Length: 179
Image (cartoon, rainbow, N blue to C red; front, side):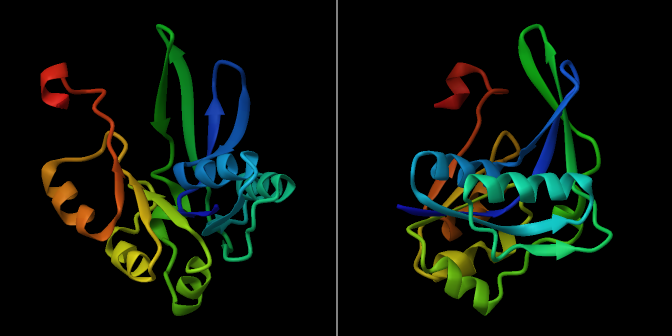
């Protein structure tokens, strides 16, 4: 299959090991697709800071197509801090998702033509593209969208008509409410 991640990128700073990794829902989707042997791409805004360059270099080394990324001069890559608390990962946003939130990707006609080459497009609530999902789906490509644990019924009702598959985390809900 041909898979494209559209939208978010961050660096994950693991405080307990003093290590930083490229990440973000859409970046991870593109990377995992590539690691499974599929053609993959990532389209998003990348800041020109040290962290953005790390993301770019890593994805390039892994063979993920980055030809539709937009560089943000003077931008800031989103940073998530991760630590272990009682064996669970606790992830906090350190800078409000950086340039991905302050200057979200624009789905131009050129980008939509590119997305049409793929079998599936993935985005998430951390991409800040909700108002553009209909255009992506309208390009004829199934859209997978990850709400993470940041959803309510209003968001589901607003977003779901513009996507094909939804992922939702119910980690904060009691078992009866998950169903």
